[in-house]
Image (cartoon, rainbow, N blue to C red; front, side, top):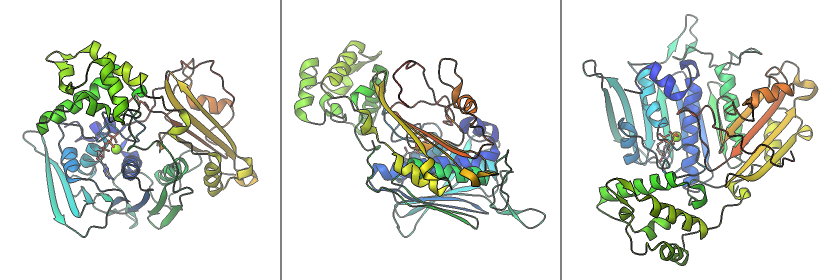
Length: 456
Ligand SMILES: Nc1ncnc2c1ncn2[C@@H]1O[C@H](COP(=O)(O)OP(=O)(O)OP(=O)(O)O)[C@@H](O)[C@H]1O
Ligand SMILES: [Mg+2]
């Protein structure tokens, strides 16, 4: 029941009900791009917002039925990525559950989630049992023509206000004609910023949006753009002992279910730099784990700490660390294209990049800044901020530096406040992005790098 009331979902998502259209977009587009990258296809994503719902469609491999079953089981979190330390947009297995419960919370009578993937339409309706207070999930499937990819539609009953204008159940300004004020952007304005953020942080993305009558389109600028995709092996250098134990634990549990028991050598093959058998042999010889089964690394009381520590040290010794540029760089040219689309003069764009190692982990931070120029009168600041190629709804760089002042303070010190006609984008790629909350609204940022060389 952690998902089945407005209060619970506000806690899970980190946003008030008014903002949920943005939460729906953020989570579904993240999932869609991750899935496309996993299948090595440049993402083509379409978004449709109409009176009765929001639809997001991708050209990925299609959400498997077994994963949908997992998402509908409110006792476990379901993610194909959660156990890895990697540069994924989503990795908690939480968003899907929020999205399944959300239609019930916003429209208990008519709300539903409809997923079409792999030739099957899944119509999912949730209710709550009045006596036991347990969620009841009605999941109906039927065969449909397979067009590939995944389409997810969140639906509610369309309704109209006294003037006959369509309204959404979120109690917010969502429509093109209700553009927000200088100080208070509407949900529609914020949605446009979010779409722009996706297009800005993902040079390989083709994004097409129909927001009631309004259209927004971004063509990919680089279909063969290189970045560290979710389908790449993860690096042993990104793991601490606790991460390695978590991953090994997941594999042992999975093997038990399948009546299998993989060897340590097979486990090693998943890691960057250890996919070759010669390298793996160096590790198993050095640690004496040749022929050892993964499950033998643990006993009733848990993992054998010293063995796991030796294993991790050896894995790191025999694989090369990933150099920061391999994570992926968005690049100045791409920022220029997007900033021009926003109406900025590209020759005024200032771009800075910093690629380095912090605490043994590679990272790339890029920022771009431009002014709207003379025509900027009456425009409000556009702030695009995100991590691992996912723009966040609000600035997630809330607190960093020695006094924890955060991005907002720094921008106001530069007189780049919300009422200024400027565009500022900031993006960080890092293999161990951590958020303070399940809604992924604020990044955990340390300040250990204080005093490091900084040319930008
Ligand atoms: N459009 C899609 N195409 C293919 N697979 C998908 C798609 N959307 C979701 N999935 C699968 O469903 C899983 C669950 O999605 P969900 O958003 O709940 O979790 P997540 O993205 O792993 O983590 P987070 O909670 O941080 O978003 C994903 O890990 C992925 O395997
Ligand atoms: Mg997700």
